[in-house]
Amino acid sequence: MTTTVVRASSSSSFLALVPRLLECTPHRSLVLVPFAHGRSLGALRVDLPHGRGQAELDSIASTVIGTACKVARTDAIALAVYADETLNGGAPLPHRAFVDAVLARADICGLRVVDALVVGANAWNSYLDPSIPAGRPLAEIGSALTDAPDTLVAPDQFSAAELPDPDPALARAVARLLDDVDRVLARPRDRARLSAARQGAADDIVTALADPPALLEDAARTRPDEVTPARLAALAFCLERPALRDVALMQWAGDITVGDAVFDAQTTFGDGEPFPVDLARPMWGEGPAPDADRLRHALELCRRVASVVPRERRPGALSACAWLAWATGRSSHAGTYAQAAVEIDSAHGLSAIVLTMLDAGRLPEWIFDRPTSPAGKESSRGSRGR
Image (tube, rainbow, N blue to C red; front, side):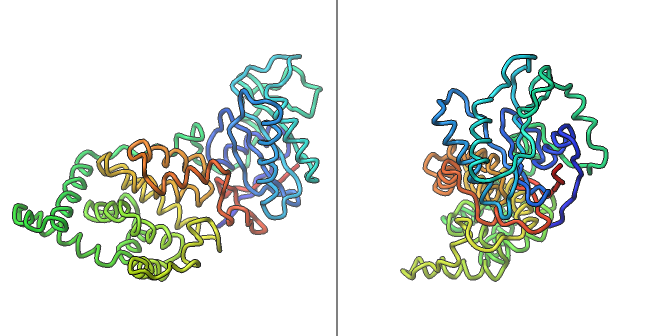
């Protein structure tokens, strides 16, 4: 994964860089950027706590700093609070108690604090520099970085998780194909009621489903907007079924050899054989880091599947989106997908598991294992600390 180094030589330029690190403009958030030897190691965003007592703020702060410490080689942090409040000269800066708790935990852990800033509705300011009580104009942030690359920045931390608007004709075609496959597989006598063209299309999908790893690998090598309606229906069929969905996720986190192994293990597991632990480890975020570009491609593919299938058949694709978002460090998006799935099917297993992992603050191990020129948790951008 390539890293773009952008110099952030001032507080305003650092604030201009944060949305590029996250690929979104955060709202009602604390963003913490860990550093190693003056280089950023990505960015961690958490919701701002509201209505919490000091003990709870201290606990949340400990979790935030503990997460930063898990990133390899972290020796410093910078943080920015994105608040809805207006900054008034002379009044205490918003969320001061929470920020002080985070800074105290950083000090206990021996982390140097590069900066601690707040962006309000009308201005920005520093928790560490009392010399600008009225704050600085927001316009300074927009003009701060002159050497920053063009980066797609979502308007908030959740909008990028919205499913794309489907082509109605494509959605109808996929729904019909899924119904036809169900008839062919579950009610063979109904096959004769289909037209010859629909029988042929359903038979082609059933043939593709005979070798799921080959189907999944073909999809992994095809642009999501170029996947045919028949292939979208076949993928939806797989993602609806937990065993095949897990083959898909582990194969996209690995390669077709892994997919073949997981598919074989799923088959023998149904016959009473134990499931190999090494094949299951990536599902829980353990083991070597997957190819991030491959995971992001799979996420876009599953988003497209979820957007074109009927709502009642969407939880499987949504749960795959949730896991893939989690696997790439996009916890906010993972929660959005998983919650959407359980709103359709309250007993949906993988979606509930993802929500449980998110509630526990669990992230994949590979998210914390950064190379020398590291990439961000929600982006591949880097920066130099001041």
